[in-house]
Figure 1: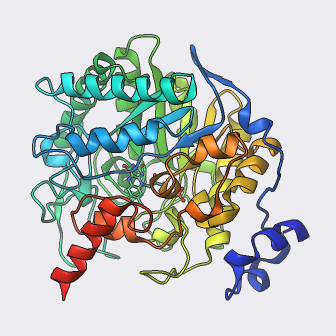
Figure 2: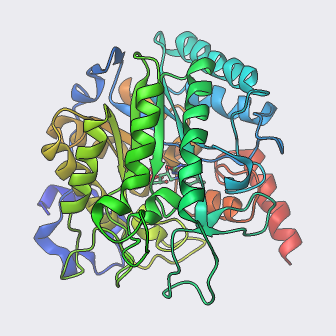
Length: 438
Ligand SMILES: Cc1cc2nc3c(=O)[nH]c(=O)nc-3n(C[C@H](O)[C@H](O)[C@H](O)COP(=O)(O)O)c2cc1C
């Protein structure tokens, strides 16, 4: 860690053992020069106007069929005006049973026209506010062990995991897993019809596809060897990418490291300290071989180790590890993957824990070329126009995400999810929730 990094991000480090434990090993880039962040970049046939991406953030505000509601339109209109060139639309389920909650979006023949209207609304809003059309990627998923389509857990797991299962849950059969590929293809084609510019096959955060990566003990064609554990990812990316019209961006969001420790964890290094990207790099090779172009690199699980997947400061929950180290690990992982795959466009994640220092880190990351896009997750909920404000030199530290965990608390409790600190609509939802809790 350089002196500059320490000086700048000191507020995040306060009260932690980070400096002692990680000393010179960790480094977060810093710059106050916005030039690199403003540089356009090509993704397939598209050109993104800048290097800021808004991450997929489930809002849990669809109707029970998975159709966008008025609140979905409101949320995305606000985000689209925000000035990020790349908008990564939240997880959309490929079937009703695989939803993470009753209000997760699900694209179907019946509601594709509403998705189309939503995409057009977003593009128009961005064009009017920023003078360019954003690139919009849809994320497709099956929630697997975290399926909750009727508001109570209805898990479909990749395997029995003695670290977290006290009794065998419903384990997905080979036939079941195979039957999902056509659902991904169908949803992807509907997304193309709706006007999305790209399709992301979600393979992260312990949902079904990513859980299979650690199915070391599973029997049959989806467990054991690396080839078997990644078969579902390989089959789906191939089938979807082959089926999509040529102009649509082929994308994925992948876990390159689970960080659970123990036997059932993917990407674990032998000393358990950082990560071992050997398998992740091979996985990304498969993605690239199938025509993948845009890769969003992530780690951990929001359900098991949120400090790894979205570093946070002490707030509603106490983190198990230091936020800055978590961010360093996420960024370092993405940087390593980028170095090994120079033909891909890479998005990194985790910046929101930096609070008032995000603008310097974003500029630094772009300037040093450790990523192609700097991804903003929780920060985009707290401060939807942050991209525009950073790029125009109007960044306001008073509007930032405080990484308190409020949006996640709403999500966990099957409520509409957003920023409980900066957005009055979600503040009220949170207040009501707290009242009912008492
Ligand atoms: C409320 C909430 C909803 C999320 N929804 C999604 C999602 O739909 N898909 C996904 O891949 N990640 C999702 N994430 C993870 C974020 O995209 C992101 O990886 C994480 O928040 C770390 O980035 P940040 O530090 O900028 O917030 C969600 C996180 C939160 C807190």
